Amino acid sequence: MDEVEWIARCAGRLQAQWPRADRDALVDAAAELCAETRWRRLAPEVAAVAWLRLGVLAPDLPLTARGDDDAAEPVRRAA
Image 1: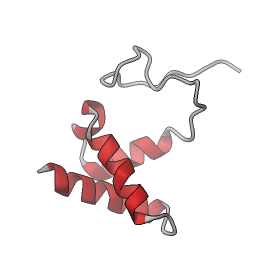
Image 2: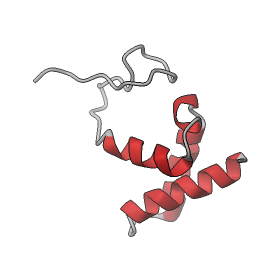
Image 3: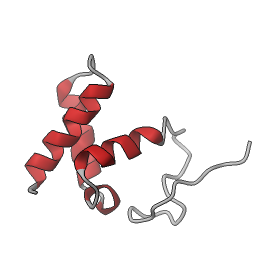
């Protein structure tokens, strides 16, 4: 599947979660996901759901355990 289709399908799944969100913002989010190998290797709808399951991250919270875009697991901080 080409990048344009991947982004469109991912943005469509994000729109299903946030129907009132600005479509351009969702396309931008999908494009950012598409640019990362760990998301791009998934089906676009699966990537959207997996990303949504991460929840809202604090700005200082690293996204990955290794600090790179290809790590699979997010870092969890103890409370």
